[in-house]
Amino acid sequence: MTSAQITVAVTGASGALGRALLQRWHHRGARLVAISHSSAPLHLHDRAGALIPLQQLTWQVGQEQALLTELGMVDLLVLNHGVNLQQQRNAEATARSLEVNALSSWRLLEGFAALVASRSEAERAARPRPEVWINTSEAEIEPAFSPLYEISKRLLGQLLSLRSLDLARAVRIRRLVLGPFRSALNPVGLMPVGFVADQVLLQASLGCNLILVTPNPLIYVMMPLTTLSRWLYNTLLTRA
Ligand SMILES: NC(=O)c1ccc[n+]([C@@H]2O[C@H](COP(=O)([O-])OP(=O)(O)OC[C@H]3O[C@@H](n4cnc5c(N)ncnc54)[C@H](OP(=O)(O)O)[C@@H]3O)[C@@H](O)[C@H]2O)c1
Image (spheres, rainbow, N blue to C red):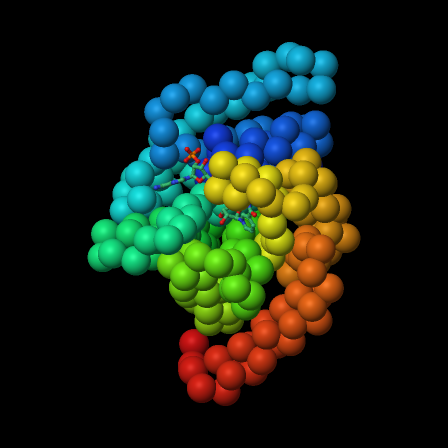
């Protein structure tokens, strides 16, 4: 996807990776939509210190339909929001992890695919192919020392593998599988968030749909094998 004139919307916009991705898309000339569950205004600055222009939208998990009505002009939707409720296992924490990390992203993926499929022929021809990037995590297949985080990210990854079989006709779907980087969610993450954001955009510009950024060499072998085996299993056992 070329950056000039495209509109990029990012959930979890005020988080570490959300901000880093928005800044990089700004430098590539994109229009920005920052999607945040907090109503605090988001101020991002470019390399020269100038305020980056952006539209800010507020949403809450469970209210995806209301958010989708605002995404009519979006070409790339990055589903990046997430929580890590470490050491918790009660019913409330379980529900919150599943809703925030898995089900809200799944609903937004379905809703955005339906939205772009409803665009007219002329509108589709005039715009780049719409894309959704989904930030799962290497917790899809590796321990993250946080059971609820692992369960919810694995669910998201599994849903993505299953529903991509149909939804990839309407939108290009890219899966971001990231290793530990520093943020509020993971203050001891190894990688600087700027490096991760640069790598994500580089791999996307190279045409990768499976974007891997991690210091763990096993992930580069295991994740492609996992997605391939899920594709085979889901294709053989389900119908469109
Ligand atoms: N850090 C890591 O090591 C790591 C590794 C692999 C994958 N990831 C994934 O990368 C993504 C970004 O994480 P990050 O590390 O940048 O963490 P972060 O700085 O904590 O950002 C996560 C953002 O998610 C949004 N969020 C939190 N609770 C929410 C809720 N209840 N409803 C809706 N949105 C909520 C918040 O942004 P708003 O206030 O703007 O909504 C928050 O700032 C997450 O999906 C995470 O799982 C992180």
